[in-house]
Image 1 (cartoon, rainbow, N blue to C red):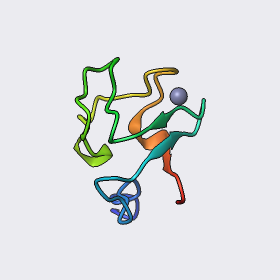
Image 2 (cartoon, rainbow, N blue to C red):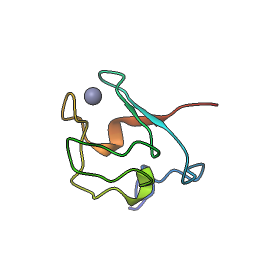
Image 3 (tube, rainbow, N blue to C red):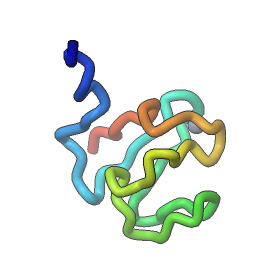
Length: 69
Ligand SMILES: [Zn+2]
């Protein structure tokens, strides 16, 4: 079964899309990167390493939700 294979794929992600942690509401802004994980500014969410997690609560990438502009 592969019904959930693409569950975490976000077709609406652009390089400038900001995402919000579903646990603690920390925002990942590609323009800012992530100092905690030494992610340089300008890194799209989609380009973050798979092991990246919320710098505040350690939630995995899959817990992040796109912020509607
Ligand atoms: Zn969090």
